[in-house]
Image (cartoon, rainbow, N blue to C red; front, side, top):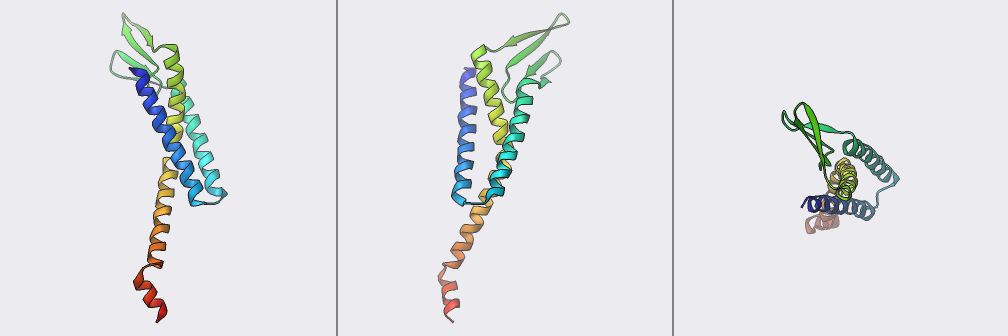
Length: 140
């Protein structure tokens, strides 16, 4: 069951990343936007690496969870000792890669929102240029 959650996060993150790359290519902005996207994805990948391999957080007085946003290992306090309950190895590696990809895409979301805003602003400007009321004003 857990692998379905991992697959859903992976496919959703990959879809958002491909959508962002296609939007950037379609709008045709300069190298600054590509460089900014590369920097954001790099920072997101570094944050994803840290969250996937080093982040542990409390989930109550007796529970700790390792990795974020999808857990890889669960810890339970039994008789004063933390006992670990890791997910299967294949699922753990798939989860780690998915966590890195997901956080990289989350870091790139502000870039995606800026591109969406720019694209809509361009479409509005084109619509205003081509409207009949503007054409009548130009002829006069």
